[in-house]
Length: 184
Length: 413
Image (cartoon, rainbow over all chains, first blue to last red; front, top):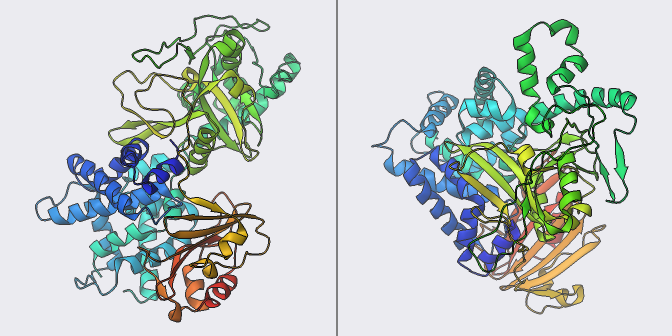
């Protein structure tokens, strides 16, 4: 079944949309969620993502369907991660990514967070688009998908050390960018 | 700001950036192979003048095998330009040879000798369909042994090349079988990843044309290990393969490309018309009926409720489509890869900008540039929504200027 056909099922409010989504995207979304939460929770996060898609389509007819489901899955996994954070610190790749992102803030963490995640996300999108493509892609794989550096190295034919150096440089650039935009 | 907020903010990244990061795999191996293939083709032309033939009967180009009478390893050693430097370094050679993925390139069993006609060495895999009264007994051919070695040059855009075993199998089993095929997709003679968006769209396009197409993915502990663009097709579908002029296609029988992962390996078909546990059948993907209503341009603009909120057709966007579905009036204007998708409705779940707050600067800010995304470069906008006091316009567009978009939206205030 094609993506378009699956979207049509959502539009028709046909429950087969959920089954077909699982068949088309299940493994992909679960792999993403497992970077952030346990395997058991990952399946529930993916189900959450399908139901969020169910609520959003219609009126949405997303052009990047796979990426949209990835975002919904990540959001669901982050919700769960936050809820369990106190008792499940460490272990997941997300935790390592969080620590890396703390470097961007350079000790200037502010629990209040005056800026909305969506606005910040748009700023980060602009930042990534301004990077050389490979550097931007590596950063997205690490910070959105929470891929390990070894996985990124394999994906792009780089050495793991090269990936780490690239990520470190990109974080420094992001810090400068956020400062220049007034977010830090 | 804190690190959690920064981490969360990545959930709002543009979808185009996420898809872009689904980067190619195995590119290195094919690029290396392309260089070797050029050398081999030159030698083969001298030794076997008819090594490469076009088969007018099939209407497509057929890459003929080069029966060089030597192992793939030996070929690599002889034709690799670094031969003189590294020939004695056995470990290095092993690494080089491994990087060429002989399983990809050696389409047939070794021991062939120059000039030999291909010999059918083993029965094709006849996978009987079973368990359902509805299933036909059409055999599915997924492997076919020929003698000798074959190597292929990357296809040009619009070209379809078939591997030797696939062609031999088609000759032997004809229309009485279906063929389980792996497609390697190329653009400008460079390989594209099976899990990339180009292959994804091709799988969908072919499925819509009646091919059982899919993406077969193998995972190692949840991490994508390998992916294959697969087809179940009839001989007729392969003979008159519905190629796009944008891509080159190299078609292999399944067993040529996919190693035996064993029966317990989890396999996922993540797109297209082939199911995980489905044995081959003759079913053809059917598109569900469109539940909306197609309109003419005149009907759309004359819609008394929402028609006044449609934009003017942008200049040069010759292909147009108008439809009404679930209370949404939609106009799509197309020009090659460029498009304007303009939706008018009385409700929305999108965050909408009040029409009074609309400025040219705001639109310019929301548009973003996506170059090198595989289609036309330039500014785009995604799901930009404006509230005209209970009437909502949502625009997704590529190939128009911020000034044009602003003039259209401002004119409706």
